[in-house]
Image 1: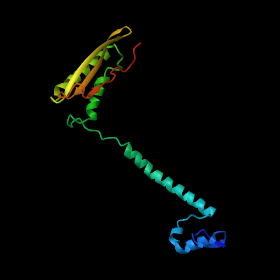
Image 2: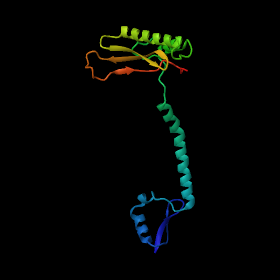
Image 3: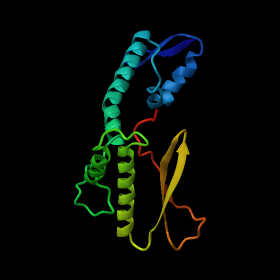
Image 4: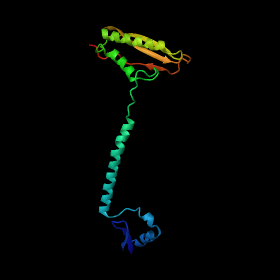
Length: 182
C-alpha cells in the first residue's frame, strides 16, 4: 500500500509503506497542518539541529549580556548636596575617611577609643537633627574579655515614639574594630 513521506524540500512522496493510504488522505484534507511535520531525512534533521543551536547561541549572546547589565546595574552616585533624608555616597565616604584616618582599629587601643567616640558623636548629631517623630535610644554596653576591661558595644534603637514597646523597630549593629586582639 503506498504511503507518503517527506522529501528534502518538504513535499509528499508516495511509496510502498504500510499505512500509506492514511497519510495520503491526511495530505488531501490537511495540507497546511502537515507542513509542520518534520522530515525523516537525516541530513535535514542534522541541519535543523545545527540551525536551532546557532539560533539559541545567538539569542544567548544577545540576551545574556543585556539581562546581566539590567540586573546588576548600580545606582548613580548622588552628590553630598542632595537632601539629608536621601543616601549620598559622597557623604558616606566622609564617614569612611574619618573612621580609617588613624589606621587599623585594634580593640583596646587609642584608635579604637577614637573610633568609638566618633561614632557616638555622630549618633548624637543625627539624634539632634531628627524630628520628634523618631525616637533614638542609645545604649552603651560595657563588657570584658580575657584581661581587657574597657570594651563597649554601641546599640542604637530607632523607633516611633508613639508606638508600643513591643512594636518592631530598627536596630543598628556593626563592628567598629578592624583587627583582632592578641
